[in-house]
Image 1: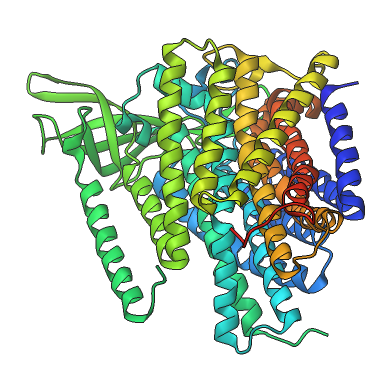
Image 2: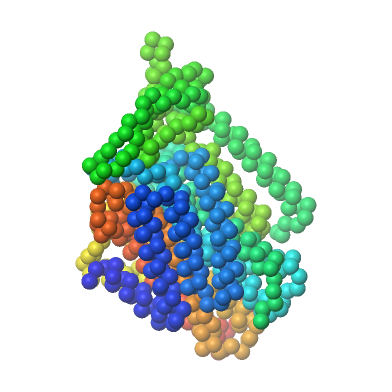
Length: 250
Length: 373
């Protein structure tokens, strides 16, 4: 058996054992999201516009993550709505940043890996860079939105708060509690993945100013920072959305 | 610190002023660089050729003639002409526009005429402005919690740089030991800044360390048992040291944040449960912990999967366009990332019963709990 199949089975068994039915649907969301990502890649390689594919795949991935991950319909609905808003705003920011930073495709550090490949492939890599940053940030946006929505739903259930402003502030307060760990998840996720690159930089004695202008580094750090912005936006947007349209829950 | 009313506006104005200052400074910081920096003042496209490769990909090869004005070195203020070639797909090359600041190499003066090659774009302005945006949002929206998160990121980055330099000094020997210690230090710093030195923090710390250790060890055992079938360590990118230990170290660090996230969520909730229902039994606490875990496991495993898999997008598209099959593309560009996200997933799931059990034992009925520290 292949290593990946075995690890997948182990993960499935653990998820079902620990999570029961919710674990089962969490596993499906993981699998479906990966399929989505894979087919997004295939479609781009067939020549479809990466920007449109990003919108399509992004919406699907958000829907799958949220509706399969959350059992409460109210929480899922609000979390999905606010993540969509944040995703669209973030895409605007990403396009702006990628336009200014110009980090499409590969850098000099990739030269070895690309040996023998044709690079004139006719795919707009400036848009592919937007796609990478957009899709990377989705998970973090969804997670933050779900946490805030779930916390506020609990407050609504307990009828603790009255009035829109105080409910909005309660949402922000919940956001303050999760922001530290949410940022850590992203920070370590990215820095773990790029340990080798950082060792490369240090080993070849890149100066600080060289690193700050390096194509590969800038493209990575842009993704991290943009995802941070996504999480930070998700908190007030979710809190506002729920307090603005507050209905007593049955 | 909770920013209120006029105080908030004051901070916003200060931050905007600082942002404007930073922007102007980085726009005019060419004197900081020893490499020649120039600004593109005029762009002229000299030729545009259709190109077709053996996989029937069509692209255009464009030649640009750029007039640039030097911003530093002793030729500052002088203009010269440089050439640039790019493909419209911009896989490796760049399309420069008027106003771009660029780096030059091999700058020399022959008979009063300057010549140089273009070697890259200056990107520090965007970087600084993006960091500024994140800091402003953290401080203005999150107040004190934002400042603590910022402190944690800064401290961890500093430590990370230090350890990488140590690793190079030891020439990659003991990578695993070094980065395991780093992981422990990361956990302590992050949790201390989020929770402070409390028993909550201790419980989250223990759970994180144990869950991550078990997940990584177990996964490595499985990888060895299956003889690494389907994994291609030679496809790891940017590798300058022995691949396998580096891969484990990467996975270890990558999963740390998410595992910490689950366990601190569970710890915080269980302390709250105990405060509201002081008579909660160990069994009830364990069940409550599991419920929290069930809620976060889906979104959290997806966060890491998306980070690890979307990173591979750039090279996957290139592989597919170069006539490779789906299977080969998957193996060469995605298999390692997927493996990493599976290991992280296992760590996240293991952390749920571990943290719940640990907390139940620590504060459940029969255990000791004084107040709610």
